[in-house]
Amino acid sequence: MNFHVLTLFPEMIEQGLGTSITGRAMQKGLVGLYAVNIRDYAANKHKKVDDYTYGGGAGMLMQAQPVYDACMAVQSGLDKPARVVYMTPQGTVFTQEKAKELAGEEDLIILCGHYEGIDERVLEEVVTDEISIGDYVLTGGELPAMVVIDTISRLIPGVLGNGVSADTDSFMNGLLEYPQYSRPEVWRDKPVPAILLSGDHAKVDRWRKEQSLKRTRERRPDLYEKYMQEHPDAEKYIK
Ligand code: 9D3
Image (tube, rainbow, N blue to C red):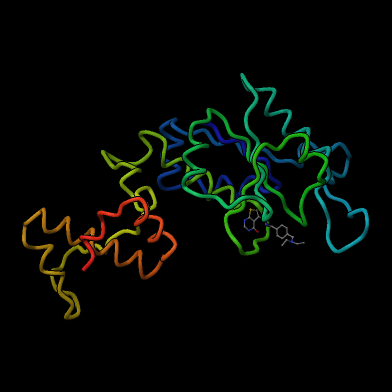
């Protein structure tokens, strides 16, 4: 899968995704990442891409022309038109479901705003999807774009290590994960729960299920209600 990121800060995208699992996925050729500098499409000799807003108000807006030309330059290089995702606080909130949907695309163009946003007219022309990553205010769309790319990348076969399946994760099954422990058996007087050392796999599975359910009920009642509606039989795990 190929990600084409339209941004004023291409090095931020490259640096942010170039290491660890996403970096390895790129080296393996499983993921292509192309950061396109919108400033390269400025039509004026000062390379200016922003201007004041009509109607007044604080701040600058990214102008339509360089965004449009950058987007069209990418689309022209593709076999078929790609979806264009605009990262914006006004978008629908990103979920694992949305990630799964987008993971089916061959190419994805991701548009990052900066300043106070982008001229609405170019958004109407090129954007197919608008995504927010949550209800808090950031300085631009670059970090959200990286969040979206990271989430989608780990769903691509071969990106995660040996036999690690993305769909046994929490959220994939609708519950939070159970607590996990490694060596040593006792650390600062805290023992590992005895059941995990018992060797009884059925008991361990049952304990983990119970921990997941209790944790989800405590911390994410919204997820718990949804899970219980879909799995009424899960009641038996929770004493
Ligand atoms: C004028 C009002 N501001 C909206 C609250 C303007 C504004 C603030 C911050 C416009 C853009 C931004 C930068 N944020 C993003 O580009 C962004 C974002 C975010 O801030 N939170 C969650 N998801 C996203 S996706 C893109």
